[in-house]
Image (tube, rainbow, N blue to C red; front, side, top):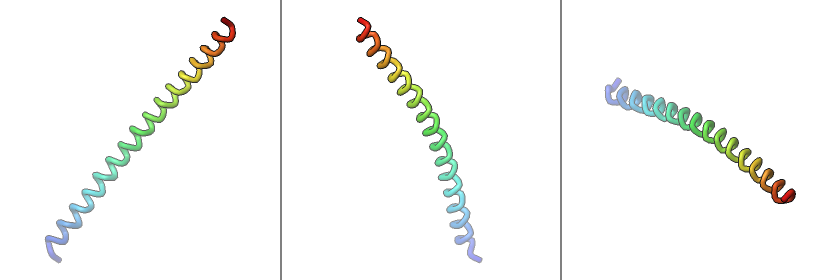
Length: 58
């Protein structure tokens, strides 16, 4: 068996593992960002509701 072929297979495997780890990290970052966007949008909706109530009462 050629050592070049073994080296190519090992490098390809290592590359796929690195890409998999980066994809996992990206997924976690997107999950955190989605949670933050959800929190911010809920706060904005609540503030808009409060503003609408204050405008009607004023």
